Length: 214
Image (cartoon, rainbow, N blue to C red; front, top):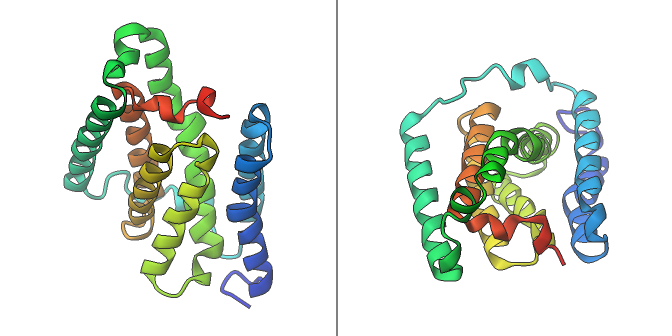
């Protein structure tokens, strides 16, 4: 038994189904038009499992400071912007700042809705559920953080391009650090939201766009 009150084998089975099998099915076997339904189903499962996990509290999840470290946040924004611009110049030079320059309405829509439609559900599944229910399966903080980054990257395999996989591996590690080390779900959500907004503003968002799914 674990601290959640659930048998360890059951937790490992759940973990494998949610964080390994489901992303692989979405990447290898699910039609593109059903992928977002699959992601929505993952969110519903996460909410249900968290609600029945002993020791987990939605109120406590939101009680931590939004920004426990402003210096790290500022450095994160600057580094993310620099990396995104460099990658766009390298991979798609004609696409730099494509949305704000050519489709301002879509750009603003993404800036407004990305934190709630994309970043928030992902943080519930990949930070709150992962650490709240399965974090104790990994020995040591380093192992848990590495595993979290790996499965977060795997979740983006269905885009089938290396920038999405590599960037979400790095981003997953940072978001996991914000959640686990700074003890703040809101901080991880904020960092994730800002990263997505920067990605779509600079033009790197083409690698995270539904139309890229084969």
